[in-house]
Length: 362
Picture 1 (cartoon, helix red, strand yellow):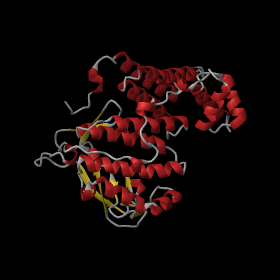
Picture 2 (cartoon, rainbow, N blue to C red):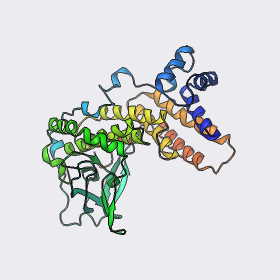
Picture 3 (tube, rainbow, N blue to C red):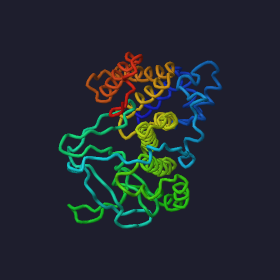
């Protein structure tokens, strides 16, 4: 292992063990440099009173969902509004660009997908960095969360990323194969019946395959995407847990927009983001710091100030460690400082209810 990678693992372990170097040394000596939460707990048991579980805030009992690792276990009681589809101004141009893709799992051709036209909508994030959408004036104002998910109506493969499907490339005039790993595709094929059974129990019906969807159908589409991402996580595909956390912050946003409670989706998002941080499951460094900010924000939203402060302190210690390297122009350091400043500002504004408002909702 390179020195840089070894230092990164030790930095992460220091965060988990609350800066107790002797615990880090014991962990590396006994378990090597693969971070595993069972091994973390084993070391904590060997050093009672040091680096306890408060070093990585755990969800308290009243916040633990039934089974956050199994997306098929989550059932929503949808509100009446959840089955509605917002009406757009038909006199304006649609911001959607229709296209079709092929399914790499069941080989179905012509699956309905929609992309956004360039510069048609602007994005304003909610307090947990889930996107809301506003028109630029020329185009209809739509909620792209109701449109962005591509769902195969045969096997229920779902993803907001067209590259997970087979896409025709106009430049090369050939099909671009799915980016999903072969073992993921195999497992998706083998678990088709389970996805169908889950879908039948949701009660949203065939509106799932129409665009735009109802709020309820959009929530189910994100649950189906999470089912895919769970398989990716089991196959140790990079960023799978990061994706899962983001899917659930978007489900939380859709719940708010449908007049439903957002607590349970945010609880599940926390679990996945914590796993992403523990495993360094990010495609680029900035997303780790962004994730720490989201974790801070969710805990603060739940009025868990101590746990929120713990995550802000993780960002602060990260900045200090990066500053010791002596390069003030280091891109990773600049990203860490950026998110630390954003997090500190939210902490300073914590007594203002306005910081939790969702754009577009009263």
